[in-house]
Image (cartoon, rainbow over the protein chains, first blue to last red):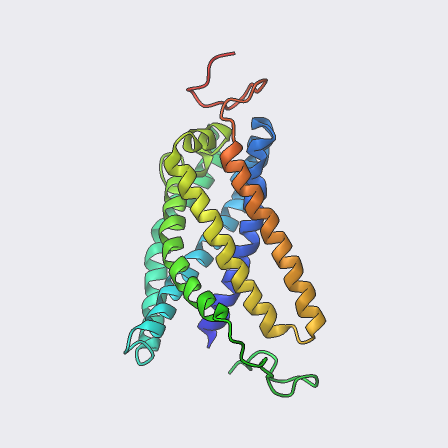
Length: 115
Length: 151
């Protein structure tokens, strides 16, 4: 039940970001200066944390989506849905740890060290 | 436990489904969510890996980075597929949520109209940007990819 709520909330969050992300990318059609200025706003540490949260939402939505497909199409899916939810959460942690180390290192080292 | 949508309301004491239609649209939409979902995992995980984790990560992203990617048909097709599938997947997901929680017919109609217009504008805009993009615009002075002629 909570995985269903989580799937909906992460889905809406990702969709809203997608609308904004197409708009900001569209600035490449305005001028290189406009695009680079706006994309620069994504590079400060606060936005870096926001990106981490967004990726966390995407990875959960992706893995839980695979679980939904398994529940729908695999004969034993409904029986093992709870075990699969734990698998989703473990896989989410396993993917997020290296991602966070890599991404936050990039975001924070460049911010404090300059370049 | 979480109450199911529109299950506890004065206006709709019980969830009233519309009469069964003879259209198979809902079945198609259900299947599309699963198929597009699998493809989107590949497209978006690849997108995040290349744009955030390789090289300098997000700090490498500027106009020249985008121009370098879209000078290759491979990334044009990749991003086009990602745009269309993600927008259709997301629009259908939000459509489902509106149908679940908006109780009045008029409210549902209004919200879905706004959703479809916004989705249409974004899909058309994104598609045009990918295909009309000029990696070496005249008059630009910064961040041009290295293959542009020196002004």
